[in-house]
Amino acid sequence: QMQLGESGGGLVQAGGSLRLSCAASGRTFRTSTMGWFRQAPGKEREFVAAVSSSGVNTYYADFVKGRFTISRDNAKNTLYLQMNALKPEDTAVYYCSLKTRGSLYAPKLSDYNYWGQGTQVTVSS
Image 1 (spheres, one colour):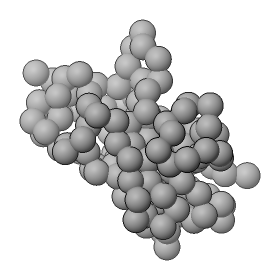
Image 2 (cartoon, rainbow, N blue to C red):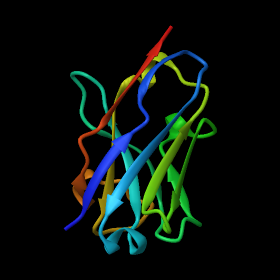
Image 3 (cartoon, helix red, strand yellow):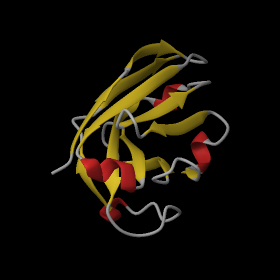
């Protein structure tokens, strides 16, 4: 059974940076594609980024390309999301999740299972 726990969120001014972490339990982490999603108030949960099990391949939503970087450390069972040049519209609860089926490049919410509690990111203007 996989358990995930996000951390690193907070309040930051526009243009600032944050680094989110996702600690995972279980050996499945090391062999699985992992992703980050976010959900703003009143909006649906949306895909942000994904990384292959090895960490070599990544995929991003258009709205974060060039600003966010997803990475992982399999030795530490930890997933990361480095967020730079943050904008007020990036304000949301950010979640990590394990992709249980489908391609890295198919960001379907239904392909992801095992969610953490989320971490709040608030970007002030």
